[in-house]
Image (cartoon, rainbow, N blue to C red; front, side):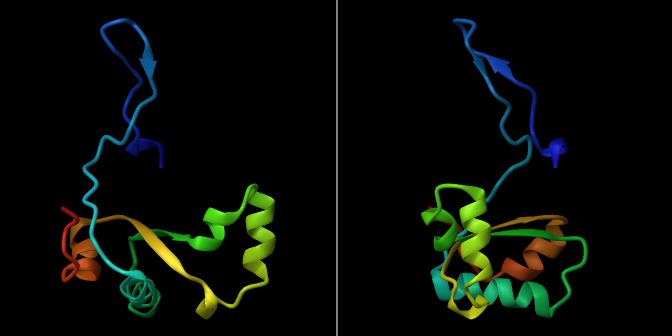
Length: 105
C-alpha cells in the first residue's frame, strides 16, 4: 500500500531518511489469546474493506521468507502463536473489530 508511505525526508545535516507512514497508527495492547480472537473474528465476521497482516512467532523465528513459507505450511493455524496484527481500512471497520481493546500506553 504505497499510499501509506510519506516521502523521504532530510535531516538538518542532509542525511536522508526513508519515508514512514503518513497515517496515524494506534497501537493497542492485547495478549496472544486476544490477538487470536481478533484474527478469528476478522475472518468470521467478513470484514470487507479491511486488510490484515498477522505476525506470528513462527515468522519471527525464520531467517528467510522461504523458510517462513515452508514452516508455516507445516503448522495448523490453531497451533500458531501470534504476537501482533496490523489492520488497514476504514476507521469504522477497524473500530468495529478492535473497539474493546485498550491503547498501549
